[in-house]
Length: 361
Image (cartoon, rainbow, N blue to C red):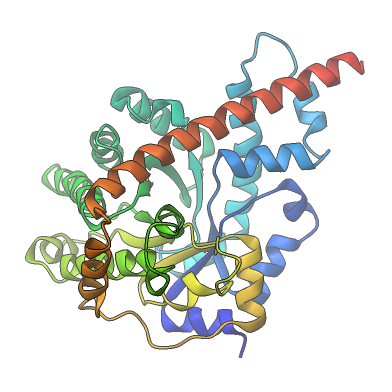
């Protein structure tokens, strides 16, 4: 049996962390669905910037939207919605078969709004309405300013992919915002079954400390953070608060492992897939990681619900001088700044292509 099928049968959803118009047109995404058990995908500004840069397939649309009166941001969302709604249709069967648990695609609000609650909420509502697809998540960062927008979006019935989470504490804050939104829907007599995932970034932890810790701790921090967060997730699912919500039809906000491509060339290219195997979670993988796991992946024991030896490992990092709480905040801040840079690069790419197309007539 294909390793990706084994992982899927364990109970983990495999999502692709990529989208291009080429893979939609040439059948690559459909093949990943059929052959590698892919049941959803995520996108971000970097992914779209690379797609537009490396393909001529967007040129005609960019040319048609070249009037200077239309902003680069408006052009981008038209392009992104065109691709993502097509992808959403490919996952429609999965979404229906799982009764809305799986089969999602994700579109991010402008990262320039990461610290603006009101504007984030307004953008989320607008994009969800424009997409018109029940299986499209709106990505909202789990920053302190993003948390109220997450609660309000869930209360409004908008499915949310909470992004830029790095620690157990940040995950729990996002989960609390989600549950508050659901509980408010219950109090108003509204359907509480609004889908959400909470995306915890893994590999950036190991990149951040690679040169600061002993060799025996290299590439072990991300997994330990994942294990600690998974314990919090399982504890929340067992809590009276969630069970009261579930008893009247509420859904769990699934835990999603993000940033699971191996950055260290000396480490296994399937490190963060093999070691984060866990039921009722999602692993969203870069294309290279997905193909690598399909080729030579291994599915071992799933994560322990009690976190395994994560606290022992984290204690070793503390002894080595790593302040996990401070680093989590730094990583979230750096992640938000990185998304802004990618967004600005994307706007420049669109403007450059629009200018080139106008000159070409």
